[in-house]
Amino acid sequence: MNELPQQLANGLILGAMYGLIAIGYTMVYGIVQLINFAHGEIFMVGGFGALTVYLVMPSGTSLLLALPLMLLGAVVVSGLVGVAAERFAYRPLRGAPRLAPLITAIGLSIALQQAVWMWYPEGNKARVFPQFKGDSFEILGATVQRGDIFVIVAAPVCMIALGFFVTRTRSGRAMQATAQDPDTAKLMGINTDRIIVLAFAIGAVFAGVAAVAYGLRTGEVQFRMGFILGLKAFTAAVLGGIGNIYGAMLGGLVLGVAEALATGYVEEIPGMQQFGGGAWKDVWAFVLLILVLLLRPQGLLGERVADRA
Image 1 (tube, rainbow, N blue to C red):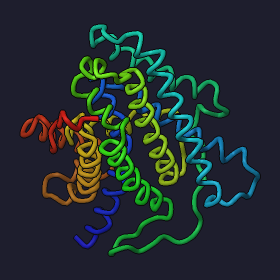
Image 2: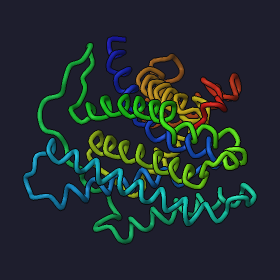
Image 3: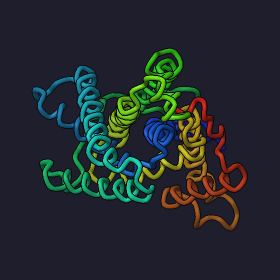
Image 4: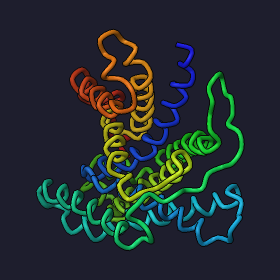
């Protein structure tokens, strides 16, 4: 059990990344009740956006100096793809049976993967993402890599900014009103089309931030990375209570910690040796989701309609 601090640290770092991606699922669902299965690929293109910015910079540029521009590149690319998806793929289907936008989301997901695979230079294989050089840090008995510091800082900053935006700004309150009753919100003078685009854009920006965190953590980006990360983030959103922005982050953290603990300790349980290790981590994540949905179908924090922006 002396590895517990390390497993908890791994889980929280991983969970923070899940939570950042899950925000996009929960915001879009909160506004238009759409499960945007292409969100994982919006996360993926953000990673390639950050990598592209780094590659066009002069050779030898410090990663610390390049990181703000890489982050900007990631959020711009993810944001533009998210907004374009809403405008050209989902908006024409607004009012259609729910199956239509759902299938469209799956098709868009595949299209984005294929676009990167085909047109990004050497996009058909994993591309190396720049890494911080130097020793790792010891924090409360756990070893934390330099690249992980980014998500440790970025996740709470993003959540504080989002909480402030939703509760204290005019657009945020309009977003809450649209989530509660879009028809009444429109009668009150709220431009619901703009609010929906805004929800897609904010979710995509968070996905871009998560993509940079993923690249710094794993040292690579690839065209398939959005699939399983997207599923995990969707799981986190459901786990926390889909439609609830704070639930999305909580669900991500719980999922990340559960995954890390299962990876580290399940194989130590007598008779469970074959179910431990990294190969089963995804299975345990979804087992957790099933258990929560059986015991608390509305998720850990529930779907808070009044706050479901």
